[in-house]
Length: 293
Image (cartoon, rainbow, N blue to C red):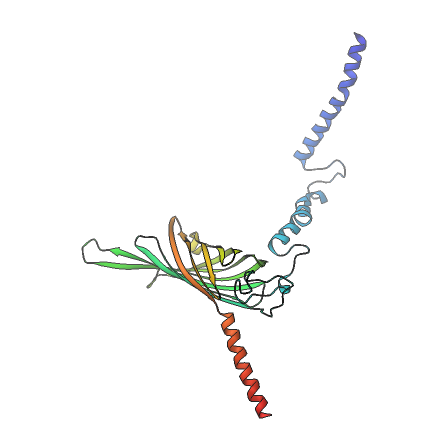
């Protein structure tokens, strides 16, 4: 029996030692010090969060927002004349294609309605001076028919949102695009109403999943005068050479008021028309110069 108690006491010694260590850990947490180097909160260990950001979180965040290791840079890809111009690829061509199309210009417009008294139109111009950057200007004009309770007829109220965006084309794959950026959002009630503005965030994607179709989605968010404002689009696009037609959803929300609208519109890629015009003019100039020589 004595032998049994002795063995049991020996077996409890490690547990007692561990409980003392836990106490030291608790004391270190409360005092903010380390018994190893005697320092307080001003020692190097207090910069653990900096190590976490720069050694663990920094690179993945950089890869996610800009470019990952072994990823093809944007200047190694070319623009298609327009989506599916070569029969299979979207707006971007694979890296091994050479098309000498460093720019892209797209104009889009649609009509929208909520099947009630609110209706309007949307216009957008996207210019990519190179494969990595897109300048986006878009304007949404909303109108609402108001009935006069006095029986004197009806009037029309209006509201407009304008966005000026600079976007980085994060993914420039031949079948998939993704971009994000920022800019300026402007809200105007029309007439003599004050024009409110704020910085904004925008992001979107296009998936060219099967010729001649593509799926488009984007969002724009701002806080003009402290009021949350958001615009969302989701649409199915049908590509007909440099033209497209589409139908989908346009959602607008300002403050607590949301306006879900159906949208039907069209778009065109103008770079082909412009490049053809410039080529023809250059050929004419070259012929004239040849005659003069």
